[in-house]
Image 1 (cartoon, rainbow, N blue to C red):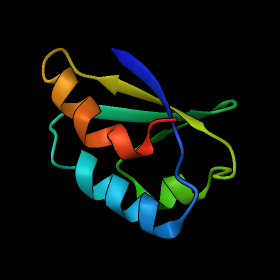
Image 2: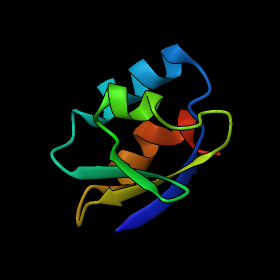
Image 3: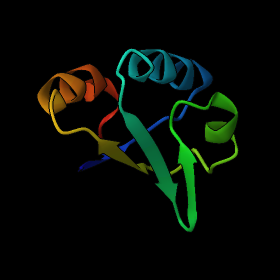
Image 4: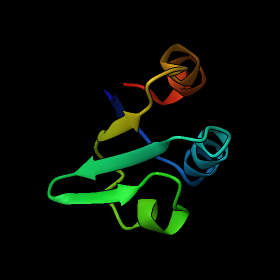
Length: 76
């Protein structure tokens, strides 16, 4: 598992983020305080406080570098 901090401070960023990670067949969790939600859920993401950076847990054994390259625009 790899953990990174990301910023999703606009509606367009949330939409493009979800579109990018749904291309991968791995689980992604967003952690904000005591809440853990599926990062592929747009409704779940909008339930979080998006004004602060959010922790993204990437549950992938392989392809971690490819995933990080795709997520580079969102990583803090």
